[in-house]
Image 1 (cartoon, one colour):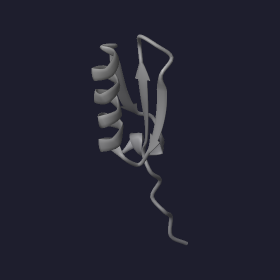
Image 2 (cartoon, one colour):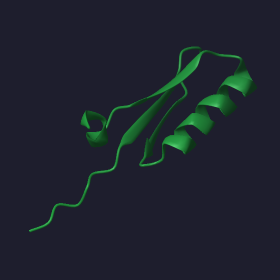
Image 3 (tube, rainbow, N blue to C red):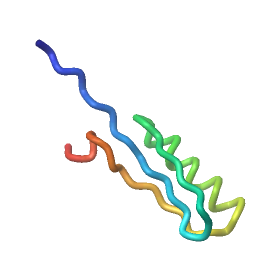
Length: 56
């Protein structure tokens, strides 16, 4: 039985408002969401890998 690799999950969170997003399997999209939200709001925003792929 072959195991399917689990996709990484990225958590994007703003420290200046309630904005949060979970993105599965796409680090680039998480980074873009972080940058776009920061540019629109000037809030401190970050993303981190939190899902199954983070233990690699």
